[in-house]
Image 1 (tube, rainbow, N blue to C red):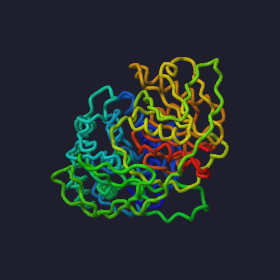
Image 2 (image 1 turned 90 degrees about the vertical axis):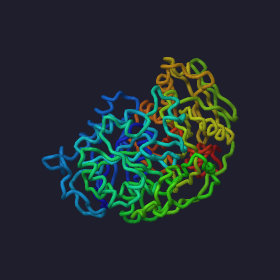
Image 3 (image 1 turned 45 degrees about the vertical axis):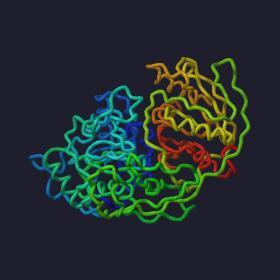
Image 4 (image 1 turned 120 degrees about the vertical axis):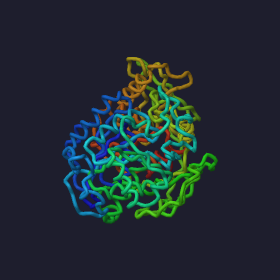
Length: 552
């Protein structure tokens, strides 16, 4: 794995919010493609292409085929490169220096998977590992209080299969990462091995690969993930990485640490923000106090290589010093306090219409497919958005709350209390054949749309509800800027609008990624379970920085 400034990265994700998260966290100029065929246009040196395979809800065969097709489209390295006649790692390819200048012409490969292991994870991993020398797996996401200990995902200290994180799924949660990855042959790498340092860890990776298996790493902190990424880099260009946004952030730190300092503001278009400021290790012990949320939360310095282990694993050893740690202190800027807005005109009553509410606290409706359902606790996040958004002038802002996460109800309520107009949609209307008419957001105003979940969503109607929501948004005049929560909702809306490519601009807070379309419209995507209660307020303030409040 080459660590030069001209490293090219190709990353695959199974849903749109995850793809956008990776694009921001890699810290490189990036293009986010919604069509795998676009991967035929390889990234330029020093750039990344991230593709949303939209495979979270495909069957295993179709998901594996989507991964293989994307790998072929991007021009993968020839089959079996780097192995001898017995299929073992070639000696000359192992232990490449991190700053090696050797380039084999192929890109650096990363596969994003859900930190809660939802979707056809095993089928996609097995397809992604084909022809790789070794696939290094690390699914922990410390920033969302999701760690891996003894090969088991812990959500706030509770094993995934005993938590409520899979409450919206139709099947039982896997009991281990290895179980989720089947049929991929894997070997667990415990925390104590991870913390021995990159060279020893790279040696262990090589031993596992020599047995025809792939390493699955425990990790509790972002420093653990940095050690894993660094060790993988030592194995040379034949290695591929699979993991959560936490591993993508670690890879981004590795990549950006070797890049020259960018020019001062105003000398070039804004580039994706380096990820280190948003991925601070979170406490993972079940009794750990919840971190503060809100725009006034104090800024915290990213973890360094000397950070000690969390108590989640009782036999954890002191954390080894890693060669690369988070490089900068987060920006301490806070979101502006919002002001009120005036309601817009009512839509034509001749077609199905939405119910509009005056500002008041409301309960968010479900993202009927609940693709981002998770129980990760909200954490204090510091805005890293430090560029002036483009394309905001004269357009309204539409927030589509397409997630059933409990925190989304409070996020909607705070935005409405700040003056946003709230439009509540009935699931039955959205699942019907007629397009629901939404009130067009007036220039300079904010409208938030949610689904009324009071009566629940009929089994089997979930995808129809999301499709109806996408049709309603795409029918709006005036091309408003968009905030889309939930990967399934975001993808369906953009498909309905005909958007096939996004350019990441930066991360407003952890997981809330601001992108622009080819015609200049702003689109913010965010997993449904991410962000504190003030998430929507902060996003709106970031997209409208020239206003005194969010919704004037």
